[in-house]
Image 1 (spheres, one colour):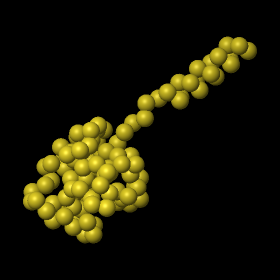
Image 2 (spheres, rainbow, N blue to C red; image 1 turned 180 degrees about the vertical axis):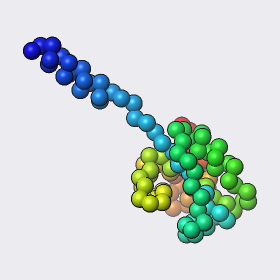
Image 3 (cartoon, rainbow, N blue to C red; image 1 turned 90 degrees about the horizontal axis):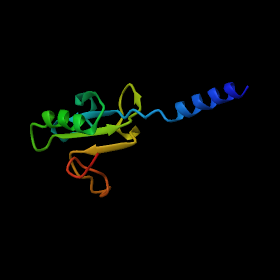
Image 4 (cartoon, rainbow, N blue to C red; image 1 turned 135 degrees about the vertical axis):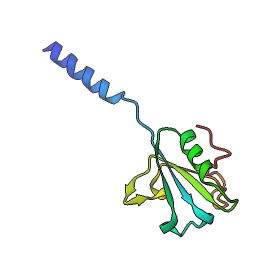
Length: 107
């Protein structure tokens, strides 16, 4: 009986200590248009912010282009950056001065 209880406790502990996989996905907003979702481009899923930012850097061709990388985003059809636990943008958002940008975010 003690062995069974010990095995159950080990399994419970092991399942609680599995590392959480972090996913990042980028969105490219051509010409900085945040309401032109029919023109958005979505990245593949990355494991790190650095990989997402590298993808984003290849997309920016003009100073008005915008890109964002979202962490742990929920998907309903297309990517919805408002359903991410963190969004890092290539531009500053005046309404959210503490919101991280590509220049300020540290992984």
